[in-house]
Structures are given as C-alpha cells and as structure tokens.
Image (cartoon, rainbow, N blue to C red; front, top):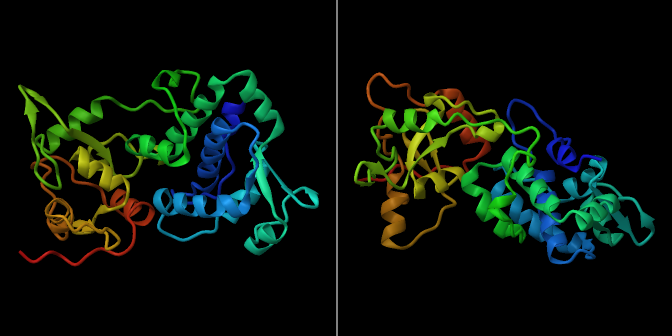
Length: 298
C-alpha cells in the first residue's frame, strides 16, 4: 500500500482553486500526535479546539467545523473513528461526536507501517506540506501540530506528485521589482548579493500558481510571511491591504504593518508585468483574513 500516494490524493471538495485544507491539517495533526505517543487515541472533544485553531490560522477565511474532517478523513483509508458503541463515526454533527465520545486515530495499517518504517512519517508530512501550503509556513505549521521533521527527509521519494519550481522565477521577480520589497522598499545586500529578499507567489504554487512574474512579488522575509499568513494582501488598485484582525501595539508593528494600509505597491519597473487580477483575487478570497483596514492617513 502506497501511503505517500494516499496522502497526496486526499479527497477534498475543490472548485476554482478554492482551498480546503481541512483533511491535510487533521492528518498533519494526527501524525504529530503519533510521533509524540504512538498509542494515543484522540478524543474529538480534545481535537476540536486544536483543529479549530489550525483552521483559523492556516485555512481560508470562511468558517468551518472541525467535525467535517474528523468524520470524512475515514474515507481516505488513513484515519479511523470509534465511539463508545464501537467502530464507526456518528457523522459530521458536532453534538453527535461529543455525545458519543468519539475518538479518532491513524488507521491500524498506517500505524503499523509507521512503526516498521519511522521515516515514512516525515515523508508523508512533506507531501502534505508541499501540496497544500507555501514553504514560508511549513516550519510554523510543524510547530503548531507538534511535528519534528529533519530536512534530510526531503527527497525524491517524499512527494510522488510534486511539481518542480522554476528556479528562474526568483531572479525574474527580483529583477522586475528592482531588488526591493514591494511593500516596504527594503533592498539590503551583502556585497552584490541581496539578503532577506524573496520571490513570493501570489496564488500559491501549491494551488497551481504559475512561476510567472505576474504571479510574483519581491518581498522581504517579514512581509513574505505576513502575506502568506493573510495579514497582508493586494487590492484591485494594486494598493496594500492590511487585515483588521492584525493587532500590534509596538512602534515597529505600526510602522512595518499597520501603516502600509492603502499604500501603492512599489514596482514593478516599467515594462514588467504587474500582478494579474486573477491571482490577486485568488489571494484575497483564499488567504487574506477578514476585512482590510482603512488607508492610513499620513
């Protein structure tokens, strides 16, 4: 049985690039708990709060119930649910899962495979991370679910469905934006080498975002992370969006985040393609959290 292929092909509702990371998040969470305690069953009442927080931080802006993946992940053959009445899930109703004291854990065959081949856990996690989240969020997400992964586990076997990124995109995007952050203008270098500047995908590469300049932004490391977390976005007029959900009271938070609201993007240079509206719209609907703050008055 190819567990990596099962992880890569989780059945998810999908339409027009809409993100549905519910099952991947639950499976990552379960792998983290298995790594900590291989015999542990996970009561729904304990998973509910943790998964709700994960969905709020790493899912799209729309609200959803943790009961959905808890029940439906069973159909992918990697998860089982039991209640006080025996094997089987009572459904997707939160009340039913609570009342029947439902518990979940990785499927028996998967648990056995992970015990026989411990590196399999890391390779499954890499598949889930690569297929559903941008690299800038991988470390934070692993910490959130309690996974400790070694970088050495990333290899050609880790992701059978994995696309290869076009390494030329980074240089093309940084050149288009003249090696400065499109949000704050940071342009640091050591000698001739830029430092702390990255090529960010607007529509995530994990969701078929192309390696094209019109799907890229040159961003500093801070603003890349905030962009991928949905704190920052791009409006229809190529002005910067800042989520009203962001809270920061320090002068740094006000200067480097809140004060960006309503500012125009810096770049790209004449002749380079600006971010395409289709990619901006995807990011706004699938990544950006909440409503944008009003433009900051200078």
